[in-house]
Image (cartoon, helix red, strand yellow):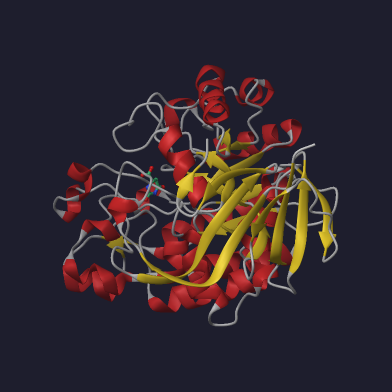
Length: 429
Ligand code: DOR
């Protein structure tokens, strides 16, 4: 039996205790655990949370290994406290068939730092015209549980209806990138005063909200479960509140950047701030934080989107949208939600681990910190302050919008089924 004792750890930020891990499982909790023969680690003062689950990660493999690979993305995930990530389908070639999703799944297992779950595309080649073979991907070795054309919206209502119908039969979830494409042609920034001042073509809130409203009604009509990616507007939160009150089975994620950053940052025209959906107004971020605290928004998902320097260090209109997120998510949640008193550590566990695991149907992630449960854990130093440096992050790309920013809360250790995958800034493969 291989045992590890974490001494003085604070589950969910509560009183310090010792936690014994044997063969990947939490074997005992309390002040009197038997340390005989075990490796003992001092975890005094560290908050223990269930390992984080990211429903929205771009790992870029296959196709853009110059910006991220399953290897480097897994390292960034483990260092960020993640034990499971969902790898989006907008790779090259697109993950719209069993061969690609099995490749991603297998590489994830070989790297072994985090459970990598491939997301399958809803439509062939993300073309929005023909449904991909959802059943084949769901039944493949990779057992695809989530389908999304993320990066693009499934705009055709009939295709979306069919995808939702199939998803119920397969017991999977469709995650929509809500963006009515006719309303965002040429869009560069949130449509509002700031975009007008800067002379950037607007991406109106209604382009998101109209699709969210439509898809909630389609979810009601089909009885399917629906997930909304990267919610960015106050209006979307209002629609979701209404839909949930009707009993419609809809869940939603918000990104760290939409909780912290707003379109005031665009005044420098630095494309590091370009993202899709765009940074909205300070009034939106306030409503998104409150909606997350209330549970109208279910979870935080990073939309970790690595890009090459030539696609970011260029003029605004030519830059690709997206920003890194895996290694900064916890700190941004502490800054936006914990420090202002909107979430306690139980709440952090809910939005970063428990709800995303439930939404995706992962049986062994997001579990309670309890005897007999998998030792899949993240240990956080709640008092640490650190300065973000893109060049020091594990991703190949360095496009972080938090460059030079001091943030609170640091992931110290990540454990996947009892194995330390990251500790003190180093990964352990
Ligand atoms: O900003 C974004 N970048 N939003 C998306 O939906 C796609 C992503 C990417 O793939 O770069």
